[in-house]
Amino acid sequence: MSKMKKMLLALAVSVALPMSSMSAAGEPAELDADTVTYDMSTGVATATGDVLIRRGTARVTGAKATYNSKTQEATVEGSVIATRDDMRLTCAKVVSDGQGHILASGNVQGAQADKSFSGEQVDYYPNQGNYVLMPLGGTLANADATFTASRIEGWLDEEHYVGTGSAHLVSPARNMEAGGDAMDYQGKEQGVVVVTGNAWAIQGNNTLKSNRLTLYLAQDGQAKVK
Image (tube, rainbow, N blue to C red; front, side, top):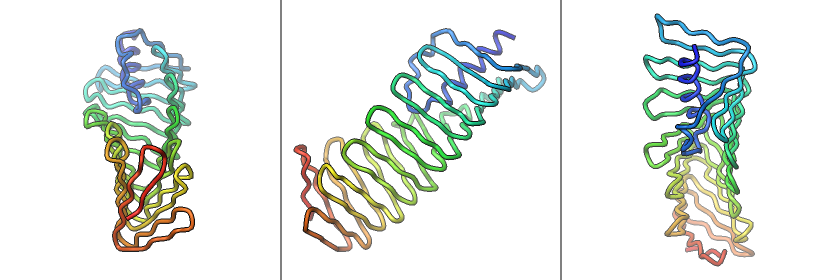
């Protein structure tokens, strides 16, 4: 049973901490739960009741955790709280298909350092440039701005985010607000936001409206609108 517990732990922690690189993969893992069972015929291990998973600085709690050793599918559900260092994730359920896809659902709230995200559903692909998809809409925020849309996809490594449907950006640091049908934000190198479809932007006392607006984000915290 101890071997199966570790198999469950190894993947359950990976699943529940999508914003982490999981560099602690070689560290010993621990599991506390009311019950742990393993079905040899199906390859499914199940932990239920006050589940607590620990590995290194990673910690995951939930009501139930399962792992299929044959398919490598894993689930943690029931008021899930996952933490590692300065990262924290809460949701109703988190699932991994064992193929590099992680799905968190049910009032997903995540934060790391000065960055945060929230949405009803977050699909995460760590092996594809840390690609994130929020098909039901959501919010991305950092120290400089808050970005919302009806659908959001982003490449976290590149700080590149695309929002469609009621896209909205608020940046108190730049005294700027913008919105439109769609928005493409590239903040890491280019520092450009392109708004299309019923686009508008406000900075200070100036307001612009167009079918397409381009905002250049300067490193000094200012913004220029075209």
